[in-house]
Length: 67
Image 1 (cartoon, rainbow, N blue to C red):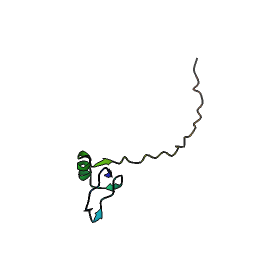
Image 2 (spheres, rainbow, N blue to C red):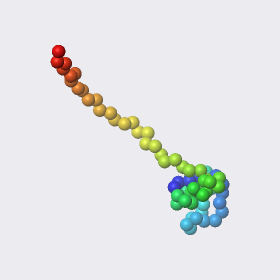
Image 3 (spheres, one colour):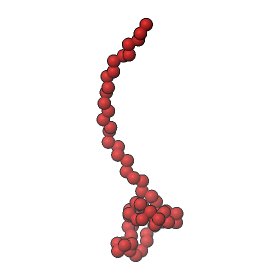
Image 4 (cartoon, rainbow, N blue to C red):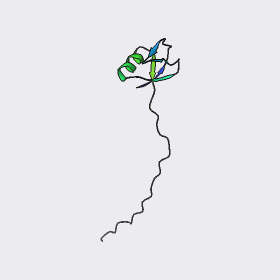
C-alpha cells in the first residue's frame, strides 16, 4: 500500500529513514491501515490512466423489412 505521510516519524523502516511530511512510502497493507487509522498517513490513490481511448467506427447496413 502506498501512503503519504502526515507527520514526521523518526527512525527507520526496513533500514530506510521514514519519508518527511508529504513524502510517500510503500508499506505492507496492514501497516498502512494502522498508520492511516492513527492519522499519521493518508492513502495514495492509484494513478488513473487518462490517455485518450481510440474508438472504432462500425458501419452497418440497415435491416431490410419484409412487408
